Image (tube, rainbow, N blue to C red; front, side, top):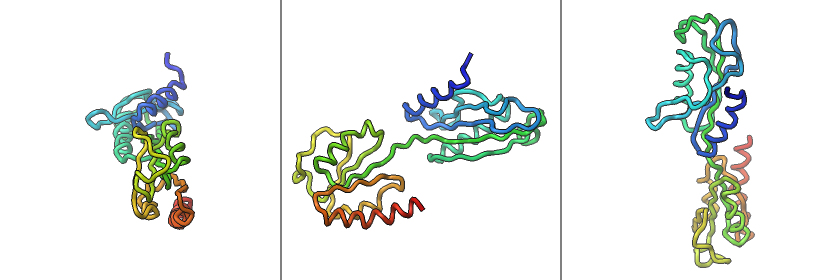
Length: 206
């Protein structure tokens, strides 16, 4: 018999596999319904893009079918979303239970955080070497040519390197949720990057 908390393990498996999914939870039930409050299911997109049930159930029938379709729509948006939807168990779902169910939908796109490190010296390289531990995509941005960077960059590296003349201009091109570390070889350049980065951080937090 499945344990009530098995969904946590399944959600962890989906996260490890980087497979986007949506969780659907019965949060309220008025009158008669197919499942009690707290019942949940996990939905992912199949190879053809159609939503498929990967764990649990909220009772089957048209209610579950409509919930699957709605979860699929949210997943195709490709971002973290959450919302509650009321389903009268009559004309809207084609079920005759007579009650009303509220379902909570939450998507988990499992996108990796982007970390931009301005500067590619020894400290930046050491941090970039932790990309697997940080579970993030790291980008090192430096104003010098690669051959000028000290210490010499490793040939095999689990991170990206961008050598550009004006690193400060790259701040505006970063994703909104990217983290920024500033540690270049030049204090003047550090200041220029910070001048660009601080208003961006204020806009995000506000």
